[in-house]
Length: 331
Image (cartoon, rainbow, N blue to C red):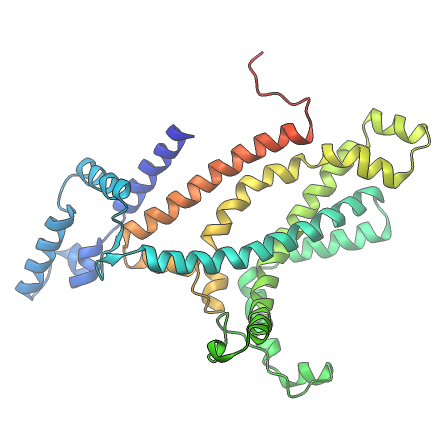
């Protein structure tokens, strides 16, 4: 994991630093002026020069990389535009994204696993055909289109009139009402849950469709094996055959997906967070890229890389827990 993490660090650093512009250009003159070398304000030119010298942006890339590693080791990550530490804003955005995506992950697995199992237990049945069609349609719908469609829908009075609540007003922006701090704990809980409904739907349906299809494929592969046929021939009932004999071995595709889902817990969704004005990690990282906030972007990438590697490690451990016959020892 350590050499892999270092390789990710080097590649990420090069990709970000080789992009046009830098924090000095964004802070003082704009990327276009910096790239063309045109700046009528001599004071601004001098300020840009001093800024680059101060943070080492005028030095060769290897030197810049060592300076970054030094700041990373000591935790001196800052916003270059304000020259303030990133940790307060990073932690605030991280809490929002983690809380929201934990709800999304729980819903995905609570719905996808039973759905995939039931579809595999009764293949080519009416339920399997209808659920497959519905899930493929869900998977093909762009999240930004669904988000905007839902936003427009809940704003229409006729929609609530059909539901018998013509005066209903559903919150569509942010995760809290303006008067959130004045509400009681129960009211705050209800207010938060109202605000997250639309973002959670938009973040859930695509992954739900994909995970459920993976679960169905894994279960179908297992229940066609000889030992399942033997259990069925001995009179084992279908529920016991599925839940006791087949389920554990069919979880491998779901476990594999864990490594790719964990970084999403931190990275968030830029599109959904922008549409619903959620100040999470997706929106913060996107704004950091636009402002050339190297430290913020690199820190976010490193957290995602660490989570990816941890996800791979956890997946390997879960393989052995689910199936003790799996071994990672060299033969």
